[in-house]
Image 1: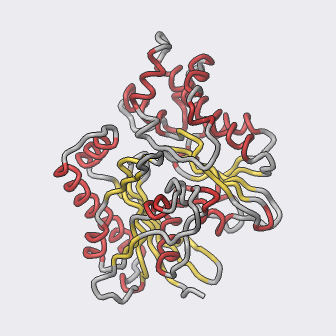
Image 2: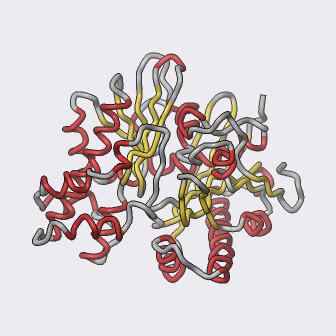
Image 3: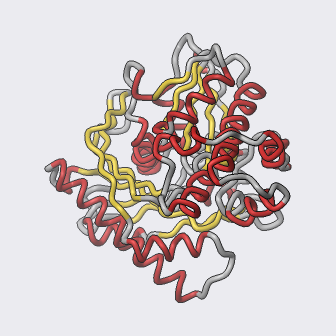
Length: 378
């Protein structure tokens, strides 16, 4: 059995709002979240990252600089967490760093995914072994490289007698279907989560997100626009499938809006919320018809208007937070905790992907290992 220990997970998702850092204790068949913090990106660096992610062109120098700067910020986040919890770095076995996704292109003929944030810098600055570059081994085995958190969902949230769906609403939304009694788990990206609503809010209100969905709640969704948004081939694809904001981004939204002029800004926001809830609910209804409850994590858990809309669409299936169940986890830190868990899987030589989710030909060990300076953690 793998030794008990402390692990740190670092995660910055497609929303690019901050780096989540979670300290997790794993052992005796349990995963316990001990402490977590959110580390904001420096404003200038965040702007550069968003610009790079929304473009398909950059210089090698720009990419290299951002990889370097992100590595330092991930290291700062880890050290800030260590300071907050008062734990000596020598007691932390590893950091699992997801990195910052810049582009995710899982389709042939040359699928690839790119996350930056140099793990060498993180290992050097923290003195802790780092596991990083989790997605590309799954892609090398024929998978989509995403989503990866369903294996963690299965380990932590599967119920012996209840069919569950774990819904993660980040920039992109994904679901994990967890049948009762340890049966085969599956999952996939449903499409946009917060990304389009955040984008529109930033454009029209100068704010990074629509707090609680209050702005959308003041508008009226336009049925024709919702149908136009839903009319995309991605939603017809069967799983396994994954996507990102490089697809569902500003250009995609502008093409859709061009044919629907004259709507107020808040009506567009209401339509984006209705579209997001609709695509999630349709994914659950089609691919998880036996679901008995939906547990939500990620930033979208704070958008009450979105959760209310989703609840109405999938009623009578209850919708609640992953923190509201026995042995649950705070919904804000589930993804960061997942990459702590994936780091442990890698150090123990245990596969971290679910081929039924990613489409990989077989299970694989995920991530490259970057030993600590003193090599005591690995």
